[in-house]
Length: 520
Image (cartoon, rainbow, N blue to C red):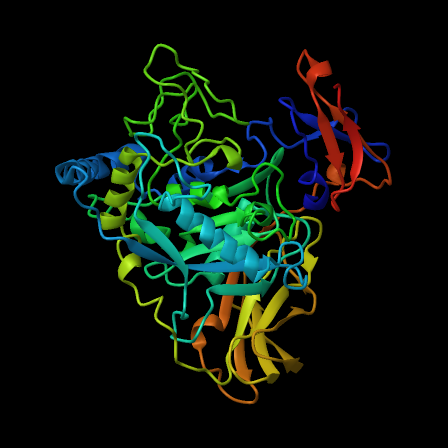
């Protein structure tokens, strides 16, 4: 179902859409999806944070976090004012690792971004966070601030091996990633979040009505009574980006790029969230929201395009700061972090778990260790919505220095009797191969699938930490009335009362346009 349902994209649509088939169907229509409330190509951090709070009861609420952070921001601001321009903070460097999730494309093609694209993203971050002169990140705004934070690719793995800060995984497909699927791959691939800013790149992050440019995990406080959010979500900490929004077309023009977000500012925005910044309109429509920064004027809601001089809240001081990285305006319009945003970010960097340890981590010291025989296994997302029988797919990767020619892999359902799969072939260092395991069957209900590398090249694997993966899943019997035997599908677009003003595009699972309406 996902291949059809989630590839239906509408540019401007506020209603629902419905599915009907012309054979073996009950009367009426089958509705799927939900109201189009999430605009395509925007940030999903706010929605993601709500999801984390709902699924982690011990995670601090927004109000609890702000109570913890407020005195620390006040202290950072007092220190800045005391300096009165005669001094600066120590410039810190954040080690970054990019996890590129691809579907077998060659390096530099489609979502398997080139090294040049990744380096261009690092360049943009350093320009934006340092307000670098003679770059797109410079501004002459009176409240514009040099954040005094720089970024660099990691030089070692968590185990001390040499690294260029870019890791590639052949565990994707061309069908997009739901947010819950991105959350599944994060713990499998994450490097120590106390030492690295983890950035995951996938072909696209699919949501109802379109896709997200990216989303970030917001920081947590420490020593909050009764709360443990700093540990419960540690294994998913970092940011996720759609591949078309990564890097700058100005510096690394090998595409594809999103047309108006092609200068690397999505990462600047999401890392702002990672260090505690909120959207400048406060995620509340109506000039009542706050981002807890006094020098970012009130805005009625998120801004798009690049409407200079806009003042959506005329009863408050200042026009909308459409040039702020924490708005939704186009990349070419963005060039400003403010002094109050800097105070907030510096307070998070000095006090928040997994943020305060990044500047002092050894991740930028070149690794010197080596591992002879190191196999790694990764689970691809799977579901059993249409059948109780399925064939799990895994990625088997060589993370060591020797060629791998054989491996013993064990897998099981619900902790039962393990089944052994003997693999043979040739995997050179840094390469991987997909393995389709024999078909399994399950009964209706909740289940767990696990897989473990038992041996590599006839002996023990050199590193146990990447040898085992597990995935919980549910099999629900499909009701007979929901099964359609047809070659024809009818889509009914349910619009509002001004249907003539709405542009929509319908695409199949290969992103080929099969229907379009443009009233202009």
